[in-house]
Each structure stands twice: as C-alpha cells, then as structure tokens.
Image 1 (cartoon, rainbow, N blue to C red):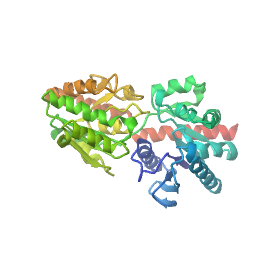
Image 2: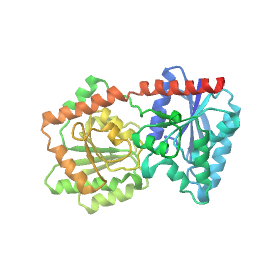
Image 3: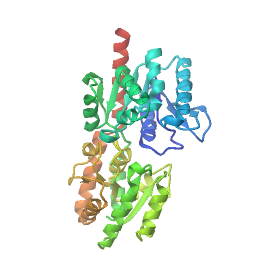
Amino acid sequence: MHIALIVPGCLQENYGGAERQAELLARAMAALGVRVTIVAPCRLSGSAEVATDFGANLTVRLRDYPNFGGRRIGSTIAWTIRVLAWVRRRRDIDAVYVFHARLHALPGLLSRMALGKPLFIKLGGGGEVGDFKALESKAGGYGRLIAGLIRAHADGFVANSREIVADLKGYGVPGAKIIEISNGVQAPTRDMFEAFQATRTGHRFLYTGRIEPDKNVPVLVEALALSRAQGYVADLTIVGTGSDIGNVAERASSLGVAEFVHLPGRQDDVQPYLTQGDFFLSASQAEGQSNSLLEAMAHGLIPVVAEASGVRDLVSDGEWGFVAATADPAELSVLMQCAMALPDAERRVMAAKAYDYIAGQFAIDHVARRTLEVISSHMGALQNG
C-alpha cells in the first residue's frame, strides 16, 4: 500500500503538531509495511522528492502557503495543480490522507472526485477554531463551497477529540464517516521515565510548539510573573519559534522576568527539554488534540493547561494535571502555584499517572494500525461497491 500524506507545511519550516504527527505516523506505518509519501508546501526549500526511511518527502515550493487564500489564492491554485498532477502520475497511490480540512486539502478532494482515490481527512481543531469554520470564513464564498465538497466526498473524517466528533455531527456528517482515532506518541520506556523523575525539582515549566498569536504564549509569561510575585521560585522555557516571539520577549522584559524566561528557539530534538522540565504549561485554545501536550505527558511532565479541544481527553483535572477554564493568566498562575506546592511524593505520583495514561492509551504503533485498518476497510468497500 502507498499512502500520500498531505500536510499544511513542511517540518523544516513549520514547527507544528500536524507536521510532527505526520512524520511519526509515517514511520509507524512504514514499520507495518506501508509506503508513505509526505506531501508538503514550502516557501524556503526547493521543490524535491527525497527518499526517506518511510518512503519519501515531496516538497512543493510556493510563494505563499496554500491555506492563505484571498489575495494569495495563486499559491493555492499552483499547489493544487502540481500535487494533483503528481498523484495522477503516481499510479501506485492507493489513498490520500490529509491533515486538516483547509485549502491545502484541495488536491486530495480533486483526487477523490476526478481520480477516485480514497480520501481521508484528519480534522485539526474543534469548536471556534474548527477547520470548517475557518474554511467557511473565507471571503467570496469559495471556502464554503470547498467545505461542502469535502464533507460530501471524503470517505472518512478522523476526529481526535470529542469536540471534533460533535462538530462533525453538527455539520450532518454521517456517523459511519466519523473515525475516532487519537494522536499518537512514541513514549519513553519505564526505566527512562524513572530516570527523568530522579532529576526533577518541581519548579521548571515548559512550553513547546508554534509561537503564534492563537497559541497565547505571552499569557504564559504573565502567569509566571504573577507566580513569582507571590514568592514562588519558577522558571519557564519556551521552545519553538513563530511570529509572536518578539511579543513574548517584550512581555518578559516589561514584567521583569526576562532572566527566568528561556527562549532557545526552534529545536529539531525537544527531548532534552522534556526530560529536564517538571510541568507543561499552555494557554493555547487553538487545538484539535495537542501533540506537544501528548509528548510532554509521555515524558512525565504534569500538565497545567487551559481548556481546549482534546484537553479533557488527555488530562484528568486534579488527578494527573490541572485544567484552567480559560486562558486567563491569573487562573493559570493559581494552578501553577498549586502544582509547585505539591509535596515531592505527590508530585511524583501525579507525573507517573500522566506517563502511564499516555504510554498505555496513545502509543503511535496502535494509532498506525487503527488508521491502516480504517483505510483498508474503506478501500475494500469502494472496490466491492
């Protein structure tokens, strides 16, 4: 089987959960004997198809990312034409799997409509940040048309949170097309987790991911400042990059906590940071199911996070984490203080529960098997019907 896995951006340029999850899933599928080609738009790298251990990476260079649309619709059109032509040439493509129902999904949609390739869409967000809401907000009505065509022609929609399932049902998507599969993670071994535990001190907070306005990263700095003003010894490491990085640095400086906010930038390997932290801190409300949160919990970091799509599927509030009702810095600060006030023994128990839950329920090999079962089932039904 050969699957084309279409993502919104290339990992070399976009430190996003979809791109990281796609690469993790591709490797897990390859271990099960499936060839995967990750197809991604890029702005800085050249167009190329490069062999990998799971199949190939195909990058398509564009002036702008195809999801923008509007005045930059030319890049959307160029992306669609080039990827559709590639799928047509590659007669061995058995199915197309797209991360997120946004404009970059157009080649997959047309592959289904014109070439009969089975199409599966993994939704990227729920509620107010849902994929279809974003599509339908495009001026001129073309986004609403594309959203309707995706709902009509996709063979299946992968939902990784209860909120996304509810959204799909609200749009009238038949239950048979809604496939509940969580994100997956490669969890460390139990011995590795125990080694991480031995070095933890109970005052280090970590955020990993994109630093964009919708992630509310400056809120984390404000929450840290409030906690330190109450006498708590805490520091915050923010791993990643994005358009809001300047705002984060300015906020840290203006609040007098710059020396306690560490900004190492984008890192190809975040594991050293995951092993050195105590708590994962996030105020993001633009999530489907946070890949960063999964990775953090898999390493035994206790989550202190704002309510968002997928959070309640991962975090049991008060049992192995803390969930704020809103992305308010004062509320997050109170929960940070609760986390830091935990006795060492209680903190270790909570971290172990977080690790055990993720390692037991969200292993990437299980996610890959389930995904392939669904794709194979739908392909068989199409061939027989």
